[in-house]
Amino acid sequence: MDLQTWIESFTGYAGLYSFDIMEDGSFGEILLMAVNARNKDILHLRPDAPEFHPGTPYREYWMDLNFERFVYICGSEFKALYSYVFAHEFWLKGFYIPVTAQWDTESCPPPPAGAKRVYCLYIASYSKDVETEFMPHRSSDVSNAVMDIGIRLHESRDFYKSMTSVARQIREFCGAERCSLYTVDKGRHECSLINERGLQNEFMETLAADMGRTPYETAEAWERILDGSDCLLLEDLTVIEERDPAWHRSLITNGIRNMILYSIRSNRELVGYIWVANYTLDRINKIKETLELSTFILGAVIENHQLLSRLEIKSTMDELTQVGNRNAMNDFMNAYTEGKSELPETMGVVFADLNGLKRVNDRYGHEAGDKLLTRAAALIKIAFGDDNIFRAGGDEFVIFCPGITEAQMNERVMQLKGLAINTSDVSFACGSIHCRGDYDINAAVREADERMYEDKKEYYRYHPDKDRRK
Image (cartoon, rainbow, N blue to C red; front, side):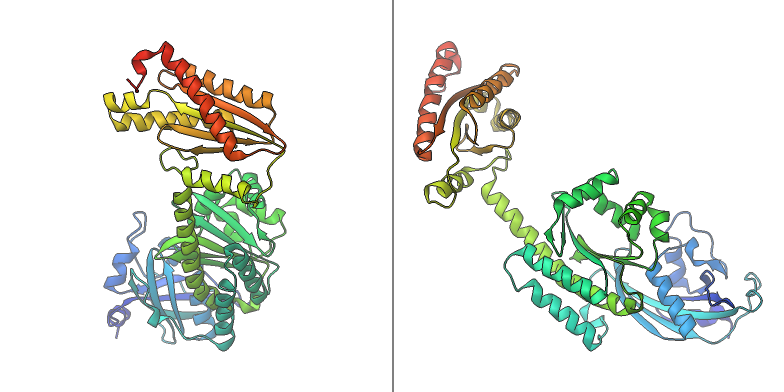
């Protein structure tokens, strides 16, 4: 039977690969010797892929370091292997089978003198959704490590405390010097870095800035580096040097010799990464199996945490203006009145009411009114910075300024009014009070509210056409 007839006899996506084992034990590049008709269509998904002929280098079509490692192990150790991985947006079930038969192909040059040519048959199928029954059985130490990770994830209700414990467990299992868990919230373009010392976002920001990136841009760069695969298990940093020189420089500066980058997904959506550095190389297969299973558990926990965080933000954040809502304001004040937080020595309270909102709603519609509210909130943020800003009602904002002097508070109020004067449509009525020593925060808000109404009366005295009360 000729080679092409033989390869067509397999019903999956089949390909025959070869490489040469040199006299010094090193491996030559992987060559694609034959593909069946189904697999040939896959080869040409890349628009720049060459026409297939026996002996074409595999990397002319794809580059997946994990696949290459399996081919090398299969051919050199004459060992059948099985993998079930997420790669190129699909779950791939693959069988690697060593082949002893030899074929002569005119277009493929013979192996170098003293080298031995070996063959690996790869048969694959794929699906969009994970099929857990196809995940291979694991050794007891791998199963125990995964179970331990699952237990640690649920030992504490504190998400970051649990992730800290898991980072330590993964580092120890991998025999590594470092391990970090890098969460990615694609909806909010936010990331967090957790290692054995807990949440390390400042360190994450510094590392990203050294590469000229934001933390989220770093996560995007890692996704490009993975190039459709679920992980990179690197014995050195050569691939990183080729694919991302800026990251390579950062790794070298921080003493990294080898590394693992494993994507964490939930429902095929990226939610984070496992990053391991300077790990024990002879454990690489067990490490891959452990991290492969652990990502399923981690993915569910991270996604659940992100969902709860969004719900918490939604319950305390005014969606339109992106400042705290009435619930958040009540929580802020109750923390002081119930003794959960100690009152600062000084507190400025400012009540700012947006003038003319009802008129805009009535004349131009609520969409125009929403835009006016959004612009008003933006001006308040400019004037008061990171202070506690809340939308207390439809057109009312309350700002708390802890630890501020009265002069500073008055300056910010004047700045807010000055910003509004320089716009064509925003106008505020403001009332403020400065508290010191033993004060009642609820009474302070009421007093600021009353002073705001005095300011509003003054505004309508000069702008009677905008008085919604008439």
